[in-house]
Amino acid sequence: MSAGKDLSRRGVLGLVAVGALAGCGLDTDSTVSPGLPVELPPGEPLLRTPTGPQAGATPDEIIRGFIHAGATSGEGLEVTRSFLTEACARAWIPDTQTVIYTGTPTIAILDEAERSYRVSARVTARIDADGRYHVAPPYDGARFDVHLDKVGGEWRIDGLQNGFGRLLEEPEVGYIFGNEPYAVHYPAIGWNTLVADPRWFPQDQLATRLVRAQLGGIPEHLEDAVSSDTGAKLAVDAVPVRSGVAQVDLDEDSVSSDATVRKQLAAQLVATLVARREISEVVITLSGNAMDVGVDEPLTTPEQFGFADRIQTSSPTVLARRGTKLVSAGRDRLASMTTRDMWRSTSKFEPIPESSRRLGLRPDGKEIAAVDRERRELARYRDDGSVITASPFAASMTRPCYDYGGVLWIGGAGLGREAGHRLWAINATVDPEDLTEAAPKAVPCPWLDDRYVVAAVVSPEGSRIAVISEEERGTGSTLEVSGVVRRANGLPTKTSPHAFRIGADLVEMVDAVWVGEARLAVLGRRDKETQIQPYLVDVGGPVGAMTTRPGMSMVMTTGDHEDVVLTSPGGRVFQRAGARWQELKALTGVVTAGR
Image 1 (cartoon, one colour):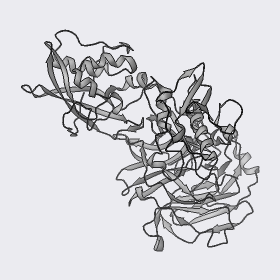
Image 2 (cartoon, helix red, strand yellow; image 1 turned 90 degrees about the vertical axis):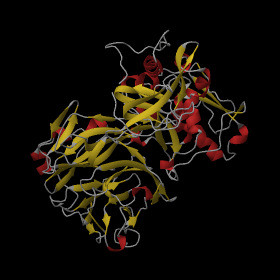
Image 3 (cartoon, helix red, strand yellow; image 1 turned 90 degrees about the horizontal axis):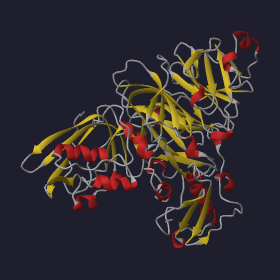
Image 4 (tube, helix red, strand yellow; image 1 turned 180 degrees about the vertical axis):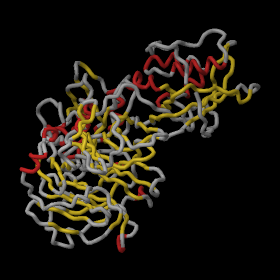
């Protein structure tokens, strides 16, 4: 599995954060203020070695010079530190937080006599100390205070707010962090697959940074859904890479003695490290001695440990719809299907009312779930011609979604005894006439609070769920990802206690679908936009606009982000074809398994 390599490659990112900035002893001021960007001459390239302070520089020039010089890592940071006093340079930790801004930061004098200044910037995103990328909501901003003093007759910064790391202009992010995230990996509980958690790190000592992150514990939004040997530590805080081989030496006393846990840890480290192009093999030792992981050949892929890559190996079943009829269609056939093809094809399913537009397909293609026009009735159409209607349990039902294990998920507002519930799972692999085993089971998700679910889609590997929610209709949307906690038999019991917010600059969203291990296609709009448009939203990454196609209400995929299919409320269907949308005029809908 080359999980990291499959994560989105983006040119330059946008990130900006600031709350309490870093550490030479000033108090934090978290007041938000809009601002304007660090000025780079047009066309000037970003240099690996920044320019140090010039003789006779003013306080304003020293502050701006320090901000510019922060766009580096490794040895280049010694130049950045030359803008600081010796004590402040020792206290400053650049990786504490990266605030990414747009526009030009403003610098205001707070107290000329005290030589204190305030820098304000408009934030687009933040990268925290764990390497996790947080897109900023609209109008986010940050400001931080600095203090200067003279050293040898020259101005130097001798006070930075606690927690301040870097303030980067958007084009500088890709230079320091690379043009793509890398993923750390966690074994899914109940599945033989690894869950990728994207992170952003400076490129110097990257192998060491990745292993530190891998051994750093389970992210709270995946708690109870994945596992890891959380006690494992490096024997020496370094991971050398020579001739394509990464050497990971773990402290023997810190690693679990359980053989299964050791194999899983080895698979995690291999999946995380081989995502780097310069690493083709991983050697794992315990305090210098070989660690037995039950694999004789060189460690090059997590598949050696029995982990499957469902993103690469699975191709979803696709059904094409015209009116009340749904028929099997290969993903490559949709664009060529005609009304005659639809008329001549035979369907295994009973006709589904045209008004039931919210559909889901079980991965084996043997069952379709349909929500009626009023969004209060759920019916399951089986390929043997039978139709099972669930007793009413929710209003405002979302589009159904089946996960990899055949569990049917649906969001809504609970009715009667289900009042207060927002998310349900139905075991679609048992006899639907078994009213106990096949009944909808509420799935607790404490992070959802009282918000209403607009859309809920389970990730391809089945260990995460992405949920669009809102306080009330028209009050703004939130998109979050949380782990799915399951029993040994694969049935869900709850979500992780916390969720990770993504796509925060989208203020309204109506539908979403997973198009990769850490990417979703989302129908939404940014602030000031008047119409819903398709976007690509990365988990732990930026939001990217797709070719415009306004007025759509549902999004699916027949593969990945290149195979997105959009449907309008009136039944017009568009399939992504490179940089344009091709209308599939013979169809009124498409439904794909597990999507």
